[in-house]
Image 1: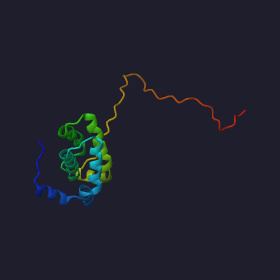
Image 2: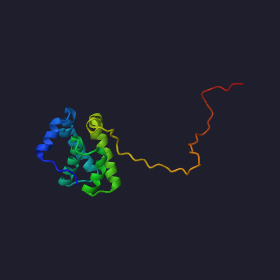
Image 3: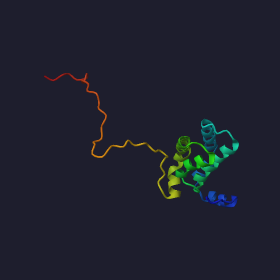
Image 4: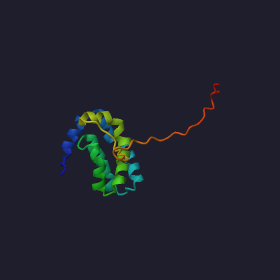
Length: 145
């Protein structure tokens, strides 16, 4: 079960943050991004939008990791995994990426966006196929005789 913080504890954490993260937490730009993202994913209830804002704030405060955001969106908002993945990627790109170096410094680990590419499995022993490029004659050169 996640630790529950009092308002005083949250303010203490906030006061210890670098200036850039403090600004990101209360910036109008961050609030606008959250509102737009929620709108795109049809999250309309004020309580749900507030919950997304809280989850983003927890990451910015260093309470939770960016890796946990997708899972939190799935469980807390009860949305599908694929939708939560897309939403967390968008949040990462618009809110976390601009302050990525500072978040990495605070968390002590490298932060990567939630991008899971499905890899094609190649059976063992078979060489990897490379896409073939069509053979075209070079129209910009004169033939050499």
